[in-house]
Image (cartoon, rainbow, N blue to C red):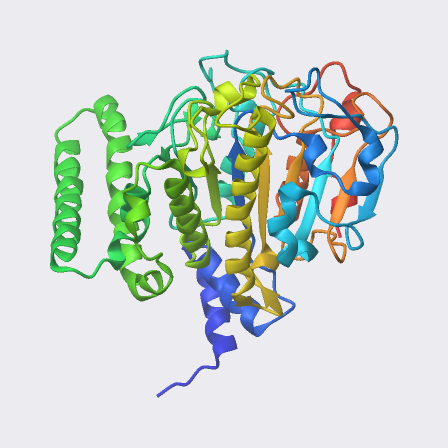
Length: 476
């Protein structure tokens, strides 16, 4: 009888990764527990809001002189561009009100300001451009994906059972709440290959964690689905033998899809105990028609998918312009608030602040869950980066000259952190040292060992050299 140490077992597993890439995340997590020198696992959670992310609401008090009133009393305040790089600790600052929920994880907080994205379209949404850095679409249509978006590239580079998990309330930017699989036009795995999002928490739960269901009906449903997929694969293979070469090639795509579904279910079956351990508890909010309930459920699912190792890349489309936050006491949709319409005894600014605070609270909940899970010589939060941004840059009708982001977490030891949090503000549009969102996305690719010094398309009004390479200020 042979007896292997855990390290020897891991070495054998690592050798098998080349032929079974879906083992990568699990091997990395196990190695991180036994060898602090091993490459750390890396995960990403993108949280994309609509109607702009107001830069002036994200600054420390010390920089309040950079804030000026909006176009009118009912419009959000404006943040003046900086003429130099501002890099400061938040350790002695009270966090901006919008970010107070992140106080317990402030050592993992970075507020990123001053980046532009004018290679994208402005207006109600940059669509795929927000994560892809190219111009596409119109006010009502996403247009086409000219290339993979950053979440799609990361999904391809970080194998998992579910390479990309998309969660949303609605479809296109001007749509309301849906109960289906939708294509919101913000994520793509490749040219003209948009990524789907689950618009209902109940269906998202069944897709990701259905194998963990324990009642008799659920078990029977799982068995029937497995048998059907087996039969479908066999039927397609039999049909292939009767077709000519041209038609056989077309059928190959269907076979690949069915085999992928069948094999995914088998892999899920092999991880059933682990999935059951991390699956979120289903409550009434999974079936609720109230938007805040559904958002909370989606964030629970996002956390569980990351912690359970089902995916390394999750994107939450936090709302659309036609969503109404009744759960926050707001009876007007986001679109109306973006046009400064008052509602229920509060100004549009107060309502927008309430929505942003709620979204940050959901991010804080996920961050705390990740921080509670040991990994290597730290926690899962050290190896997971949460990115909060808007698909409309800095305001409701975005100009894309400022594209603020809030970062929470780490990048497998590659993110330069500052005790108490960090505020990093790049020089304004066109100034020396100015950078774009493409530089930030290059940074993410550098951290996972897939370096690119160009991402998407250039802003033709800026020096190309400014738009190449990662943000060295973020890298440790």
